[in-house]
Amino acid sequence: MKRLTCLMLVLVMMLGAMALAEGDAPIEIATAEALAAINDNLSGHYILTADIDLEGAEWTLIGAYAPSGKSEEEQEIPAVETAFTGTFDGQGHTIRNLVINQPEGWAMGLFGCANNAQIGNFTLENASVDAALMSADVVGYAYCSTVSGVMLTGGKATAHAGEMSAEGMYGGIVGAGMGSMIENCSAQADIALPDGTANAGIIGGGLEMTSVVGCTATGTVTAGNNCYGLGGISGCGFAAEQFTDDVAENVAITAGDDCFWIGGITGYAGGFADEGFGMPVTVFKNCAVKNVSVTTGENADGVGDIVGAGFYNEEVAAANGAPFDQPTQFELVDCTVENDDAAAAQLLEDLKGTYVALFPVITAPEYDQLWLTPCAAVVGEEAAPGVAEMLKAACSGTLYGQEAVDAYGDGSNGTQFDCAFINGVDQITFDGATISGTLDGSEVFRHEYSYVGPLSLSGMMDGTLYETADEDAGEFRYFFMMPDTPSTTYHLEFRYGSDVDALTQYNEGPYAYWLAAGLPVDADEAMIENVITLFCEENLAEMAEEAPAA
View 1 (cartoon, helix red, strand yellow):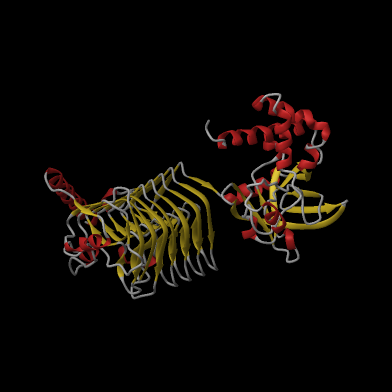
View 2: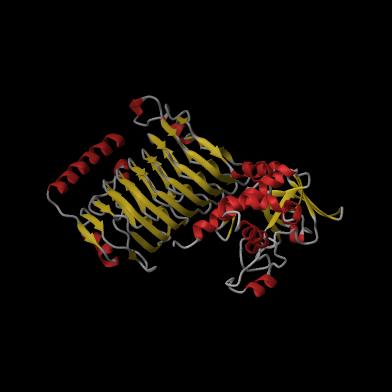
């Protein structure tokens, strides 16, 4: 019955949209006041014509939830008198600094409740919603509605314990969805739940008969004890027809004790093969989980890479019988799981070997001709010697840290990178998770390292961070490895130290103007020629790109 009711209402919505196309002009929105005034005409058709800054003032949501009647089914259908029932086209504009602080509120969001509405095509930036039930930064409750083309950045949805907290439903784009479609949306958001709550995901929270297509999520889902239905894309996908082309990437899901139904895409999902039940088997197609971590407390249950579990509840089974006496069904078609921890472990395997500092070796006079050949190919034979010496000098610095900052100033008079090994080592050995260093054959350090996460050097070079748990590691606590390996670039580049933030800085802090470069101790002349050629070609190509046009 729910499904039939929703389809009938969608038909009404389509007929209304046709009437608009025949004559009604959309209402233009260009200010925060005009945006709030949508509440004066909740069935109107709106277009956003300018970016809007809400300036962090408490927002009065567009459209509010009220039940359409007293029956259980009518409780799920929002009254059209209070819900937003029109269309909203953001036309690519941005709405900033949304704040809603209603710890006891239901159906909270930029749009609180939408019934047979169409909402989309805008960016919501820096949004924060605190509520008790059915809350999200964009739409708190979407009933038989479409939410499409919305980009959420800097999102935050925080749940508060209340009378109905066990049902929960918290998300970045949609908190609760019934018979709706969420498509081509992206969300970078942090979702937080207290004990005893449920149904939370970065795109959607509790979704019933609601499909999610072409959506991307990144961020965190953090839950207390006794919670269920946690996912990178959605907390729940009950009776949804499809999750297609969805990606959960760089998501951390953390749950306390006694939590269950947790998945990289959704916590639980599915329906039944018998169409008479109106709950279709959910198909997950071309979905991807990339670098999604799940951390749970004691007694976790129903944890999966893609889907945690099919919905099954003993109380529901006992009260309703078949088909609820078995878990709901779902299918996985061409879905993939890629975790950076596996790639990080493989990188250390690929680096196995002992290394010396690269540049003292390759700048030795015996290799001068190896520098001239690639330089001449780019700048000509006459200019090649000068260019080769310039390239050598650029990475043969002897200063780093504050000493280098003081010497180079703003860099207008030139800078040099120190590419040596620092902190008293002349050789470094990588042996899987074990990294060690020696000086004149005597061991200086040896520690076991584990993957921490991706890291960037001032946005210029991306790498992988490893950390040792050894308390005496000092300046060898962290290793920040670039993706270079002897088999790909004939050398490796890395940093190590005790301060992660400092390791990410290029021209300031204790590691300024330093980036270690290593060469295998057993490198033959072919490898040395290859690394010199690669260094010259890459740097001369960058210089040519940066040179002003004549």
